[in-house]
Image (cartoon, rainbow, N blue to C red):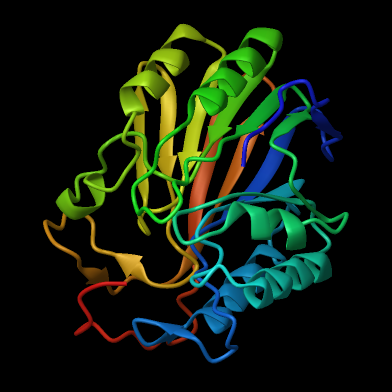
Length: 279
């Protein structure tokens, strides 16, 4: 799905002008079948437990970012379920596609006034740029020339705003050999754009099903746990972790600072089949 930079950015008003509050929910891997399981774990049950925890936040998020692999089978039924659930949450929600997703089907179903397909957000002192790193029928990611141009132009037009860039695939190594082989393939081109624009404060992604947070040249590079199965940090080959499903909460302050915390659903027992060596 290619973005047209000539489209007007979507403007939101945060609940407070000194901070933008975001919940990131990622890699939910929802199936068309309500009983669908990933590595033995029912992904709808874990997704709903994560979203229920989001709704219990002391400070309600201004909006939610769903950062790819929202469906496991890219089915209309999965996306309709997600759209209906986000609608019930009544939090403005925006999404990017992952390698398990179909961007065209997503745009058809994930657009209902609460869930929106907008890819350039202006909110408070910040802009959020959402990129499509998915490649049809491939696991790895790649940013097309038009996506890189969209990023470059959005950054050049809004130099007065702190910027968070969002995509699905990891644009830097996270230390897991098998995962780093299926990350963003043209990460050097992406990093060149990021490095040129000093108002970029953070880069946020999913895909890796684990926490990652590193400061590179003054920019926060951040990955988050899945709302379903987790992957073992530092693993050479595929390995499911025993950590609980979770999500990330971010505070984007008007002075450019980012504060963030991961919350996990550790009060519910989820069953995972650790004998399965792939997904």
